[in-house]
Image 1 (cartoon, rainbow, N blue to C red):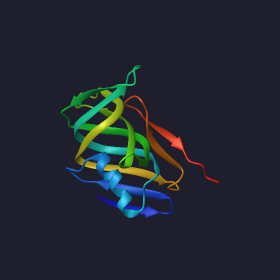
Image 2: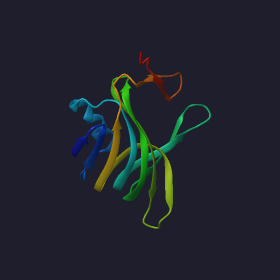
Image 3: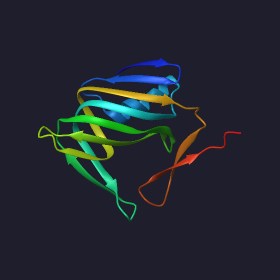
Image 4: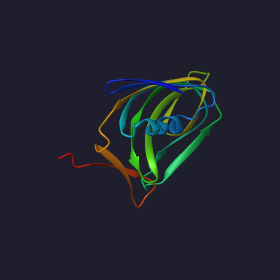
Length: 142
């Protein structure tokens, strides 16, 4: 992984074998623990994505991959146990069928290119709920 920070913008390049969530969360070692993830493209494998059902339980589906990472958005925030990433994604398989949803896991197959906009560490955080969902809470900025 390599990244460049220009003001509040971070450009991140992920290399083969790196996991997307772990890589973004590792930015906290460089003082970046709160950000909006505005875009992500590349090629990934070992994909797990899904959705939160009406009972608040995540339903998942595994795609062996590889697939083209068409779009990724979300955020990075302090959470229970450390940095927490919440990502949604669109990917296409080799037949050009598009799959999307909440991203649980994806390993870089060729490359990952991600843009983040860094926020003040006190802007937001993630807090547990009585379901699988870990809620976004905005902090008092006074």
